[in-house]
Length: 490
Image (cartoon, rainbow, N blue to C red):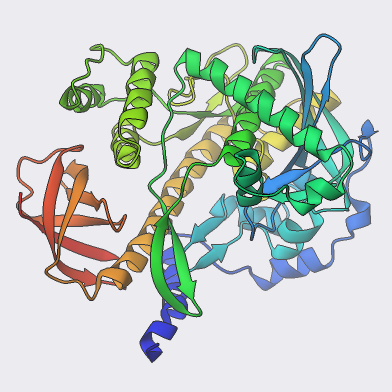
């Protein structure tokens, strides 16, 4: 291994740090923030008010192997009617991160944890997000609990929100649980060692699939990420591997969508404003129609999530290998999500991609500031108080959180491109097949099918649009700036 290869991880970390600053993030915690955290007394966390003791329920978490900021747990119970009582516990981060504190100020500046190939920049100091406010295994923690009754067909017949003390009885990981559920691996040790845990996981998998089916019927889009996972050998980056779909990730995602919907409806019922997460109807629907036509499918002239969902499901079945590339095209044409304020008595736009009307972000307060804001609104609602934020203040925060999320995406994308440039730096002149993922006055971009990386078409881009298939040759790479330049061959 060359000395330069061994320093890949270090080089990417330095690029990530600079990219964070260029996008207006604070990549490091100021001494005052760290001092405030060190002075925290975990035992003095806000435990007043109606706190239920739910530590005896069979709570578990499922996260990535290396995750340390555990935001949510889940537990369930089969009811005599056949319905399932589902409980989702969210870490009570507000109990230790007070509005107006130095820690809150840092979190409000960045608004999100940023996950890059060059390292993670957590929104909260590690003593909080990895320890005091993380729902770690075998530790009692305060939480906001969303309780839902899910009928056998997947409909949510009732929901409620409360505060509670919970305990994680089994920290599970996505890969191990997915392999087990799919019959391709053994039962994870923590499931085998915890009485009743197998029944819990299987019951919640059943509920998640039922919830998913209801949203599918309503037009929820099935999309597959094109993001690649970096593979290091020591300090050297040796590959980028696509992330595959996972039944265990689906389990958690579907439970969280349901919990976020219940949270939004709860705040509306209590007459408080809420910070909604929306994806508007696609402004470039005509281009989506044109992309579908290239596959021999006809979509209606006006945005229709059910029709688009049917088209996507068909393409996933017909060509699973290329489905991630089609997914990326549709995501680009749909446009980014954003945060908006729903005022009492009014209705904000819904989430086109999820096919839900009521949706907020509430399930990841250790790593997303909007979730922490929602937590404070929930506590006010539970206490019978007015909103801790004016609507005008929430409007400003919604805009800021949207802007910083977009900035975070740009930082993460920059580092993915820097990593890709490292891998391709020895392949100048090689030919690749790919698909156009961006076309505007700023330039035209294509994503290669293999390796799964994106670059700019510097020559021969005229007339190309998102979704067009191309063959390109690699002209140059710039690791520092994350530039990969192609010339179109056909």
